[in-house]
Length: 259
Image (cartoon, rainbow, N blue to C red):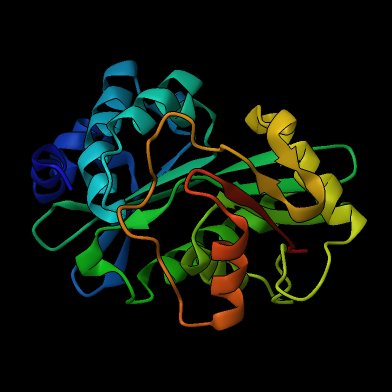
């Protein structure tokens, strides 16, 4: 890790400074252990440009700490894509001292025959990982709140783009069936592949999707690497799936039917 990355990783912004006056309008959730979630629904509609810029700046040191690699170019690209403008919900997590230690967000993408709920960029600083907090938060915000608001007359798929088997395991626990693709031992059914094709098109990555394997080659072209050290779970089959099929900047499209 370079000196610049170390400096960014150790200086975490204060949520009060990031949100400013918008903090008063946020729904706040006590996550235990001194952690608080600040929920911003439709951030593109409620945050002005200055507020969005503060969040993008704050995300750089928090994600750099989380992934162990400099995420400055990643957020420069995501801001150009309108990441915050398109989200259905964005959540910042603060510790007892008010420092921003985590984030998550999701999109709702309605189509004629199904709805995709896309989990977009999620993480916690290393000192707050492995405590089950993010799974608790995602269950409350997505399973209990977001999914019930999706159209009731069509299937809903929970989706993400990830190269982390740890995130795969977290996401699988959000699904009642526990069936998430790609799967270490099963081919993805056609309806899952169709959902993945629609997601890749929305991401602007349809041309680099290998649909049968749900693999996006060169998914993170703005980065030299995404992780300073590749994550593992201890689940031999799952770790083999990720390390065996993905290069340093590749990712899987994760797809599971949530309803």
